[in-house]
Each structure stands twice: as C-alpha cells, then as structure tokens.
Image (tube, rainbow, N blue to C red; front, side, top):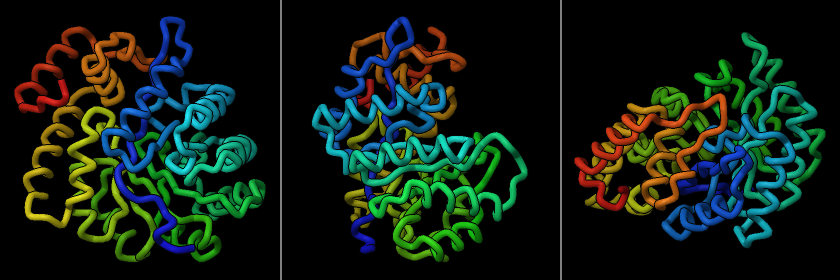
Length: 303
C-alpha cells in the first residue's frame, strides 16, 4: 500500500447533536459535517469519543454512517470509530463501515477487561481482521488509555504492522504522551500517526506525523487546517501559538460539553449544547466563562 493512500491532514471527530428526546438530530449533524469539510477539514473522524459513540447503540452508529454517505459526504472522507469490547461487535461495526467505502476505521482496544497482555490484544485484532475479511479494510488503532485503561504498546504495533502491513496503517493517539508519539514516528516511518491535539501538531509534523484528529477542530477548523497545510512556512509558529491558546483554554472545561457549548454559540442553535447521559452539559456559569475567555483570546471567528 502506498503511503499516499493513508489518511492525512486534520480530521475533526465530529460532535453529535441530540434532540430533546435524546435522539440524534441527523439533519443538524450532516450540516455540521458539511461545514467542517467546507471549512478546511481533510476528513471526518466520526463516531469516536467526541461523538459520544459509546453512548449510541449499534443501529444509531450504523444509521449515522449511512445517512452521511447518502447525504453526499464522500465515504473516503470518513474515519469512523468501530471499537467494541467483543470481537463480534467490533467485526459487525467494522464490516459495515468498510462496506460503505470509508477511508478506514478507528479501533479502540477491547475496553472492559484490564491488564490484558499484548498477546491478547494481538489475538483480538487479528480475529477482527480475519472475520471482516475485506481487502479494503484499513485499520487505524485508537490509543486512549485514559478512557480504555489499555494502551497499544509500540512493540504490539510493530507486530501488527509486520503481520498486516496493508491493513494496520495508522494510529490516533489521545494519551497526550509526546514521548510515545515520537517513539512511533521514529520506529515506524510511513505509519500514519495522528496526535489528538493541535497543540502537538507542529512538532509532530516536523517528525513525520500524518496530521491530527482533534476534538477542538469542531470549533476552530480553519486555523488548525491552515497550520497543517502551512506547517513548514514562516508563519507556522505564530499560528501554532494561536491554536494552542484556544486548545489550552478548552481543555480547562469538560471537553465534549465545552465543544458543544461553543458550537451552540457559533450556530445559534441552543440544542447543540445537549449531551447524552451520563455526560452533563456545561452549566450556564461554565458556558459564560468559556465563551468570555474565548473572546478575550480574540478568537473572533469562534464566538
């Protein structure tokens, strides 16, 4: 597989709007995804943490992908999350997504049992790949040990690349561990590594990263995409400073709820601020503080 066939750029993990009855507002979701692509996103990492995907049932997850594609969102612009604790469920989600022609899938490790070995994870992923049994499958590992309590070790990644070089082609890292990302970039040239924060993007690009999959790209896609597109230019350091300041502010608040509060302000649709339980939306005081601090940053396009 050519490295150019692998995903690259800024792929926002598109946040998910809910109606008052907590059902997905698909029309608003499609509108948001279109706006992200128009604003500079190179693709969309849908149905991950920021999409509250693990609070969605399987029918909702599959229907979301089908509606995006039927609405004209190019399937090759989608990297959906398909992780699940069981082999069968991960296969079901991955096979469905792959059949639609997506760029690839983001696979969390099986996240219920803790302290599992690399051998166990290798067996799990091998079984998923074997059962999906589709040469079009492109698998991007999703490393988020703060949530899953399981990390994809560099040694495990090396084993997977060696066994499945045409299938296991990249990784999103949400650990925030710069040393971990640097290790992957050094050990596996051409492996598509995506940090989850634009604050890490510039340094990672200089070491060969593929881009970033950042939750805050939901609210600040233009500048972040510009940073990717111009990372090797004279103005990159100043742009990095600007997007990092926004990111560093956003993470002071519950991130998913904060993103939704900002999108609600940007769009004028208050329903965007709604989260699905067990997550809570920002309080009115938190929302006022966040929006006020963004304005102080002179992030004029944001709020």
